Length: 136
Image 1 (cartoon, helix red, strand yellow):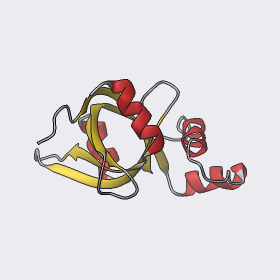
Image 2 (tube, one colour):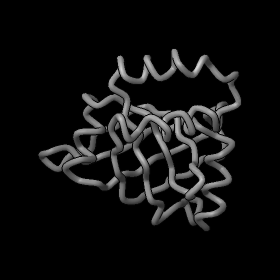
Image 3 (cartoon, one colour):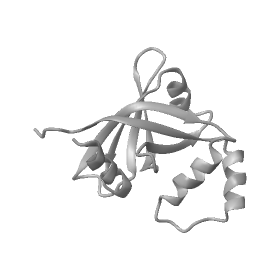
């Protein structure tokens, strides 16, 4: 699948499951909301203490399976190298992340306080691969 096609899908469909590698080599999965930033990276908000953030700091491989709100139907996976941004560096990218969803914009001062209280981070995934390329 073409990466630009995958990005277009991610801009419209946000529910997914993020896979990262555990210390022992197994896979850890987490439900997430995915979007795409202005650089074409997949972006996900998380917490500093979450296993996915810790796993990605140790091993930056990430794969996300993203599907429509209806769950059954079209879906895709994206894969690439991830970077975890912590506060305070993550604040502006976290605001950008939130603005990319169709919800109403919050009070940004309250949002900033909440991001700090929740120890939020932003995961950025440089997309290297997307699929599926075939259907069975």
